[in-house]
Image (cartoon, rainbow, N blue to C red; front, side, top):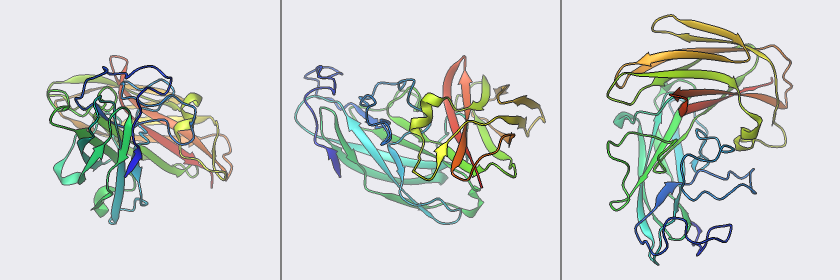
Length: 301
């Protein structure tokens, strides 16, 4: 379904951003603005995304059904195209799920949700894929992450094919989980290393910055709020634990393509009303550059 039949100029009135007259596809998963940020800049495929955009909550990955372990999940993806010329491009889109990860998702063929081709108009055109559906196994747990990739023979992903939603416009992730603030519940996730060599990362947990709140799904009945919390982050493999008030950082060295189990416990020490939730952020960094993240929403009962 076409969302936007294309434009001759950028939203601010300047010329074609990626080379006027270049008729090669310039495809990307459309990541912003989400509906609650109508005045944000238009996504033209430049990566990394602006600082006000949450890199791990791509609004272009749209779950159409509620996730339930052991049930079907249906997902749709919004794709943008800033090529020149007059012809639409046939984009190929794949979607995967994974257990919650703080770093890049390592695509797993056994967790492939589906494939959908879609024609995308040039000059900033947008289109949505047909819905793709797959049964998510009951063993998946209560939380999953979603990964999407778009490609075309004339606009393929970078050499090596590593999923890099932060820096590569062809990839995007939607990583969000919600749980009650009380009683506290441990949240299990994987710290991931998609590289073929050993890499050292920092896992950082803290309240989500206010400038990112506009990326969160909200309605009139549920609003984000601030609250203090005691945090405990544990590596289940080695037993290392770091604790802190409101923020913790843990350094972890991961082997080639390793996925290490981690566990986070957030004990909110302020009262959270029934109409509020407290947003925290798990972010994974390499040399101070973000490589992935998860939004953790703790809602009042």
